[in-house]
Image: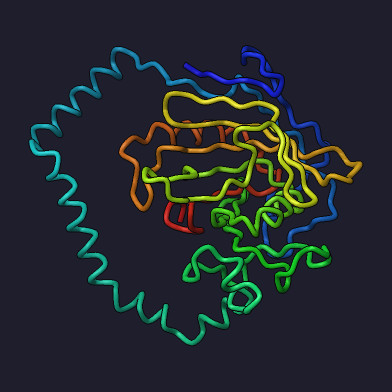
Length: 311
């Protein structure tokens, strides 16, 4: 069952939210380091709360097939730990065989050149959550360096464009979980590149209360300011698979332009540094992504790091 509420506190029944932007189409090949920022906003993104999927019901045949497959694997692996041990063993073998090659890359003198902006003293310690997870120069996201508040060198943010092989596929930006000192940079990136979808593959705190990702969006309130940028929650909903969906309006506080509507999908149950046992939430996210036109701005994906869960 899906539950949720709107910014007015009313129960979520048939509230629909649509992105009302210019109908001018912008091609998906915009997601490069030279991404045009002066173009009109891309085509309308049709999305409403009604598209948030509930847990799909299985047909009798599907249930039977699943039961047969489950019994097969139960018979093959009577001890559940056997499966994990096999996977761990294969992964250890892979690391052992490829460790030398990976080590050569990490110790290569070219790494500093390829990540020269990330290694800049103004960026290295302050703007990177992990100093061993850095964007390359050739595909890094470049923020507008003219904005006065930004102390980072050359419009730096720990984020990279991910090139897709197929022209009809939505482009992506992979980024780290924002730090408090990069909140405004993160939302400036969203506005500059017209990013209408954010996929967050982590929760804010671990089971012991440790920080996994800083609170860069309104969580318990309906509006929050990040420097010169304001983020307003239009609606919020969640379902039983561990997904939380939020719809934001994002804009500069002094701007007279219409706000940017942004869909934020958070996968709360993805274990840190591991792979989830249940893939249904991932399938639900993919189902929503089918409704996202390829001519909008890049889809932003992040966990704690800038890697691991989507590379």
